[in-house]
Image (cartoon, rainbow, N blue to C red; front, side, top):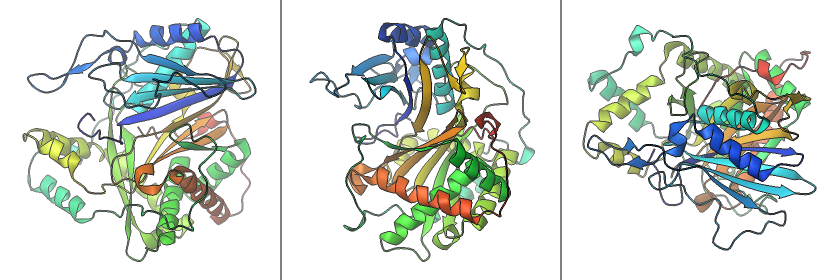
Length: 439
């Protein structure tokens, strides 16, 4: 993750929460520090070691910065500046308050520190501490046997052949927009990403459509991502045999496993031709089959085997991360039901966390992007609703690229719901959504 960070492309992800009520800043800061004590890497720095980078003993606290209701800040403060975990904690909080709109806090985490699921658990520990409760205990989870055909590969013919096949099928990057495919920057452009909120009714429609078409909500999110990328490609004047790829973070945790924050994940790569992305129902069915195969075989772990092989060769891993290639068209990460993941020991109000006199009304997330990948998309389910966040390569695609991609994604959601056979499925709580636990 340290090698993959580039100027203008920080290897950081964001998980925000927003709410109402009088938020006590000092109490929140104390909760951040208290919760971090059970997660050493959130308070540690990375230093070079004889066998590679190593974690130093904890000696830093997560940073907390506030923006006032008018949007002003100290002249020297740049809240979205990159995080360098070799110098500071790899976690930073940026909060803002508005008398009419409530408060909004963004947790920014360098991916070298932990994955998104661990960050969700940290949020749960924070709100538990804010309320004065005890955090959920760590758990070893239930072990899952790794299939024999996915045991760690070595630098043999099979792995090399897979690497050659992967390299031979490089996907298309999202093209810079034509002048007609643009509009003004979003109203929340002070933030580095844009969000789309699906209320409980619309989230239930998407869930029902996904089930009726043979998949899950996570499969549906990947399907509409492919559809939006295809529409972007068409508007840019391409199509035909264009190959699109979604990079999908996949958790390697055992069911019920919970431990101090760190990375325990890998990646799956899903490729589709442009024409395969034009039929929502067929596309979702094929992605659902691929998702079941990835989860059932543990195939995503092979990506780590490849990284392990590269790491044995001096400079090979760094060279691989610096290649000027598009490894994926879009990154799509689903954190599933964040309430279930946080396990916060706090009361609820209408399905929302209500710690210490405040109400946490929504969550949103976005993963990082790397050069060549145009868009990173994150989904969170919370309190019967869903949020979709998009971080775009504004350097290459324009300042309003995230909002434009969300506009296309929203139309793809409508198309997917319309493609499902007529049925009546009663809405159910968001915690019944499948926890694909991606990133």
